[in-house]
Length: 166
Image (cartoon, rainbow, N blue to C red; front, side, top):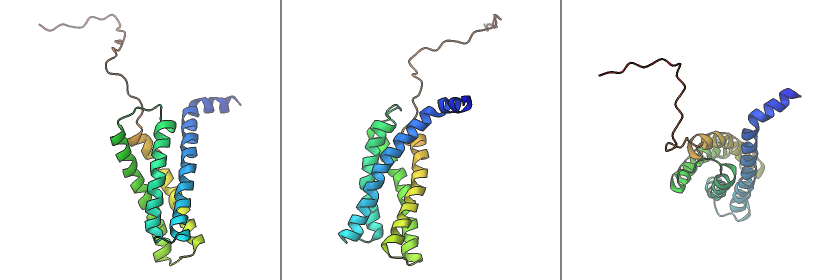
């Protein structure tokens, strides 16, 4: 039992961050999948790839604000323009992963039924989510850095005098 408590204490911040990321992601997932199906199957406006791009762009905008102001609010803010650009760039990579899976299913395997396309979409979202979680932490929502204006304490010396140069 003590092992579990120690493990929880050690990873509590990561677990809380992951839970918040998952919550924001769940809502973005509904927007993405719901928007994709609405645009492609219900309204019939576009093909599967265009519908995927539009739905993902809307979901990504939601996810950015959810992650910036809730999941990673404790992390350093490096500017809305920089973060938003990197967020969309990295989501573009994740979208490319999803498009490759949907495109492969539709155009290579020639499976056009809604079940096959939606399974491919879900698989692509899953792969993209793994990529996004780690890339957001590394490049978008940076860990707080030490304040360089705050003086640091010098390490204790062992009493030995340093040699002065003349």
